[in-house]
Length: 147
Image 1 (cartoon, rainbow, N blue to C red):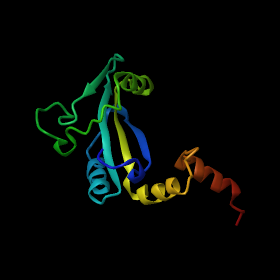
Image 2: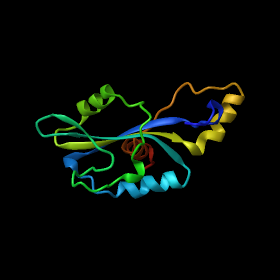
Image 3: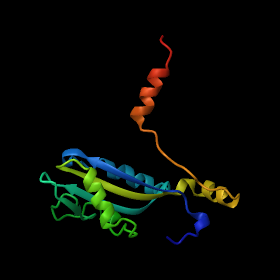
């Protein structure tokens, strides 16, 4: 990363599980849209598979399905070294047997100017989190007045 600390947006990670190894590739064009649109910057991208016998295998970023053809060449080399073997073991520990996962660390480029302004004003991020969509919908249903 060549930016200075003042120019970097918030860094997030995602672990996306695909039960039964049902990764069909529909996600990749959307991920590319985010990168090409300047919304995010990929820092690390790794793929992990947990075999039915529980063995965790790290997959090559360039050949996900093992057919010898380059599937994700655009992401090849997206590895900062932030993801270590222990992180991938942790991911393997939460995966269901017979599933695979994408592990993604990315910068929220869209938020960099806001983050820079917060830092320049002496502010700092002290907490962050996400509300799962299902939880939001349940809460909204519970609080919605009966029609």
